[in-house]
Length: 121
Image (cartoon, rainbow, N blue to C red; front, side, top):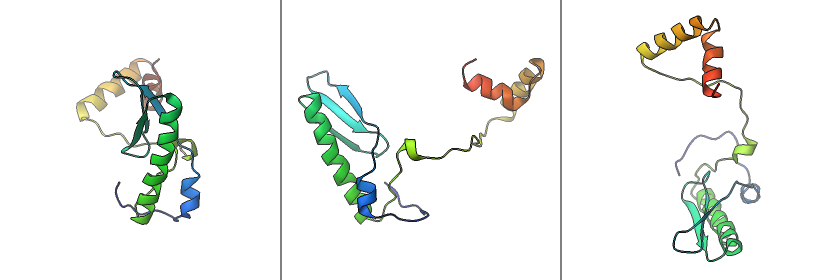
């Protein structure tokens, strides 16, 4: 967890009520490992899936309380984040030129070509 500048800090109750995606993984030695990837290091385990899911809720609460008390940023769940469809990508000049030539060959803009490539088409 790292300190960052946040716009407006909400109450502890607000953060405790956020719902994060949970990853439940069967363990090779029996039982389950459960993790909230959006809260780095927030994981637990249990002998049954029900126990593991109950344990991760306790781990989430402790993670949030500790981060809040330490003045750390508490990330919002990905379902609450807003996206504008833009991001900056840096690449070697040679790759940029190659992609631009491929876009021209396909008679589309570099932007449209990259969107198509990233979408797997």
